[in-house]
Length: 293
Ligand code: R5P
Image 1 (cartoon, helix red, strand yellow):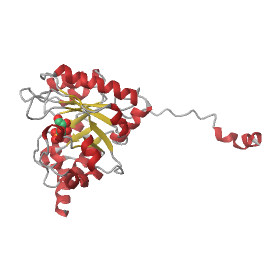
Image 2: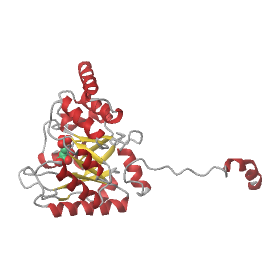
Image 3: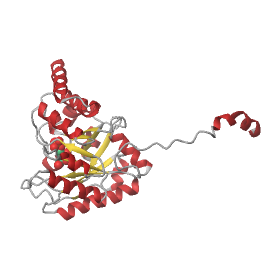
Image 4: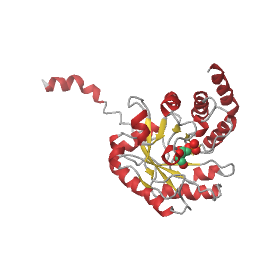
């Protein structure tokens, strides 16, 4: 009888205990819808508030980059150590097993190659395909100050609009032309423009001087791009400083997969990002793991 059941279970309603309203852990994301937050929580670790995103999307404009010639052989062994993979749909569908329990940040801008003007990109993936692939975010290159600045910014805003309709966040990548100065002033400008126009995560380069002003003036999480390969200790120190200066982790490619010991390197990066390990200790970990093979 329903009435009898009601009497027995009334104590389980706990009318004296208000339902908890848990604040979302990521900067600037509180007002997002559930699906957006859920996807962001697959990219960023809710405990540390940071991510180790492994960027392997380089082929979309430069072909088989050194270290990415065979993603199946060289990159899949790194996947268990990444929180998220940033890659193209071509590599995702052909090489990454759908059972790999990793969040996917899908490169959706493209249309140029290293042989031509790089800023001349368009949106290269339909939103429906991002939904079909169950991605956790879409990544778009933004060339502030570049020849095709306006088009690249509008690629981003269109991606944001399409993503908002489906609950998929957008990651804006601040791309810097060769002739441009990579300083805090430039990155404050580029990063802030992306955030103002709706990006949910921004990927940008580290600068020695004033990086904390870049992260502080950005209302959404900033992840540090790795850039060209540098010695492991220096890359770990850069990640360490970036996180201390406000980055919500890294989106690193070449400094991991071009390392002599990529599996050791990604674990050392994790130690820095998620456990605030100092560069020296993380480098010692790298050496130990490298020795163990
Ligand atoms: C380019 O600008 C792309 O986003 C790259 O393909 C990639 O994500 C860069 O990663 P990294 O500089 O760490 O190799």
